[in-house]
Image (cartoon, rainbow, N blue to C red; front, side):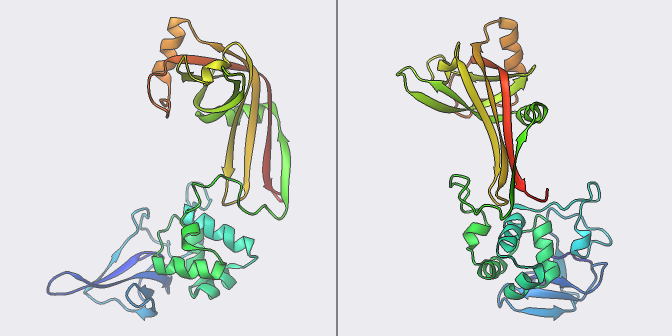
Length: 298
């Protein structure tokens, strides 16, 4: 029997095979993942040292790939990249811990868990139990909903600022690289009623031109034959950092049939807004600027 931190230990009835008790493995005593284990039981929330008997088995996390030497957080690192691969909950836990100025040992002590297990949660895409999240939230002065991403529907930017942020301008090549991945951007236009508007659109970059499709009677269609600003950004709310790129250029309608067919055939996504949107608009930037916010030591 071998286990990893975060796996579930299930005790079954020898007669019926029905689970009688289960708990989360929060501590290992051997590098190869063999027993005994520190188990936090789901029914009592207590941690005990367990030597599993013949009626016990390990339920591995679906994202894990068992193998020797995967016993602790130092081993929970991708062999291909040499870098940790945290999940969303782990990123939020780590961000809140650093924001409070707590070491892993201090935070683990407050949450009544092993520092190794806290390291595992922060470094791997784990799925901790509700009891574990309640203790972590209490230790970090936050809520379970926040650790689970309950504020994802809120506008980005409401998190705390970095203690030592670094704001730097991006060069044209880096702007092109960030802009080149298809996604969602915002185009500024003057609507038919004469008022300014900013419209989100699904876009792609083709031959250095920003292209998106819309309906002829839409607000975004007002961009045609005018100089517009097109903005795309990425905000990491958990880490209080991100970047933005602004492209300025004249928008034009793509009318050549072969070009329209090529764009439609090779488009990665359809417009999220749905409906008939077969009018392609192209913006060829004449000016590219951008900025990035990171911790000062990066």
